[in-house]
Image (tube, rainbow, N blue to C red):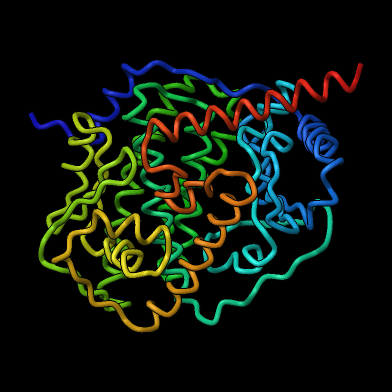
Amino acid sequence: MKISTRNLLIEYLKKCEFVNPPKKMEIYDYALAEEEYLKLINMEKDKIKSIYKFGSIGALGISDIDYLIVFKNTKRDSIGKYHIMNLSNRSRYLFCHNALFINENVFKKLPYWFPFFKLNLVWGEKLYLAKSPSKDINLLLTTQYFINKIPKDLLEYAIVHKKINQRIILAIIYSLKHTNSLLERLGVKNKKRKDFFEKFGKFRSNWFNESDKKNKLISYLSEAVQISLEFMEIFDKILINKFNIKSPETSFKIRINDRNLYFLSNWNKDSYIKKMFSHPRDYQYLLSFGYYLYLWKHSKTFLGKRIAKDFPRDIVYQIPWEIKKLFKIHSETLEEYNNFCRKKFKTSANEYHVLWTKYYSNPFINWIHEKFVKFEAIIFILINRIKQF
């Protein structure tokens, strides 16, 4: 009897080790963590224009704190001063990752480069976002989200790592609702999927009181993978029918850092999942999605040059002029974001926003660079402790 892809995935996940269980936290723990971080960077506030928080605390002990720091200029600085390694274990757990670092101009163009949800001012001057001239920008943001985050993250943490990172998985499944929101902006509505998000939201919020939580998490994770791939099929139709993206007839592959990205004319969600078991660094997309990298290839940017080196010369997409015009602002803003990080901190923009922004293309050199950034943070911690004595 033929076993369904979802059941295959469930059987695989049952064999995985469960790691990083969420820790019980209260709302005041989040308040204390934010207070500790703001105290940490207090001496640096003359360099900072504003501090924003995005997202919300939907599940205590699972949700993290997301900060966006807007700096006044590109004057060289040490990232160690703003690193969460300086925080207590509890606060570091709640932040989970470093803040995003940008300048004021990049902040104003947020609508052009990433869909930030629930943006709130924490400290400093209130800044205003530029209005997007067209709702079509959501096409680029949704494509970017599909290629950079979902289903990539779901598949990485479900298959590639061979471990169920419980807290991270709970966060990633929940973030799938942002993909749904982006599709809704493009006119797609699905009550069945909303029911899934509501049920999962309750499960996530009630995590510490749930029984048989591991099997339930596996079930939700396998369903989330299916939903994310169904979303890709829906988006493919939007690209072709609503925005008139005309793809080439030939499938192609492009390598970005340690990943292979395949854009396939015969894409199939079941075969994709099965292939992930044997080729966990191969990510597959429907052929229409390749228009986004094709636009990057022809952009006059550092990031575009990285893409052009590996992009097949015979692959051509026909894309409406309006989309090309919006992409020009999109790509130039991301380029400015990346350049700011390079000049300010000798690092790169966050790869959730642009998958190929590693500061060095050589993986070994990039690894050394990342270790150096952490070393900077450790030195800053030691300096602070010496000052306290």
